[in-house]
Length: 476
Image (cartoon, rainbow, N blue to C red):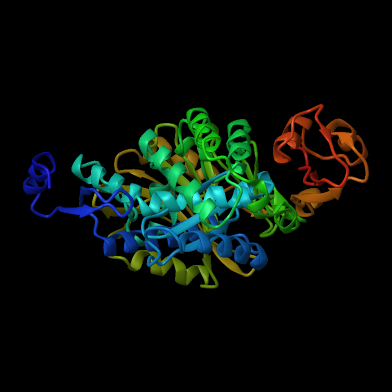
């Protein structure tokens, strides 16, 4: 061990110097392999609960098969690897410590071959094998910033702390240039070990650089957490040029991959709820709710939330389940950390109460209501720091009293846009294809999802994607 590395290790009695599985070098780490796995498993559960999995077993099995074949030949095959697809329209993928890896249906609909999928999964596997997330956790702990694992709220309010959950906090940590370069290099190696054509990485990077985040999604874009795409594209092209690859011996698997996308939802799925301005509409659960102007909103699997511009107040709705509203209210106040406030509730739903809650970060004050709708109980809640309730109470009250049944037939019947595959019977340009087989997305976006450029000649026999349906009703 070098003197340079020995010194910081001796300074931290609880720290350990561990050998990096990829580089073989020893590095400072506050996270053991066992802890790395535990953090990743908890983060994965948070991500599944906050965002939700794509309800398509065939797609889940396909992605898991490709991912596990790559991970089996990595430097850490013994990890409990998992590969799952999140039901989110953002073009994204992320890895959690210890083996959980997620891709979104958004990135699946923008790729065009199994080799591209292998490039994404290989890259994320590289982040895990090189312990990049564990390194980030160590750095955060050393700088006393913390990672914010868990929730800042008392347990009764935990379901509304999804934006600060472990999975999303880990996913939001940005990788540096060196980590990205290393993950690209490892991903390329893993691809070639499984005989995938690594040149597909070029088209993948080009697609990613053309994509922006989908409005209303629950995740940032892949580019937001994986920086420097242009530099990495050039470096990947340099590596590939030096390899002299023989395409006849490598796999692309374009058609099997595209068949997987037939009828897959594209973009935002309005059946899971969507915003029209500040109004939230949920066709599946048949309710609507108005949020304050200028507040940042988030639609999650178990809750829909809005955070004030000053980040000092939250208002939202969460699903309690089949518990009667009266019982749910009693359970809320059964926690010793939550106490009722002697404030009248005129104009609010019948089962409404003001409350005060003690947390490790301080005292919260707010108002909550439990309502029954469609056979389920929902909790409406607004809270802020003690002393700020008066400033935010009008916004809380307006949201809590806006909850009502959704009756608009146009909204109740809305369906998501979907991918439809078309095999060309003759050569044509993308413009000609769009004229014969119209899509409900702009031509430039259609070019991106097919890995093409407008005006490009497309040979006969090529399978292309188009997007059909999914037009949202206009605001009244």
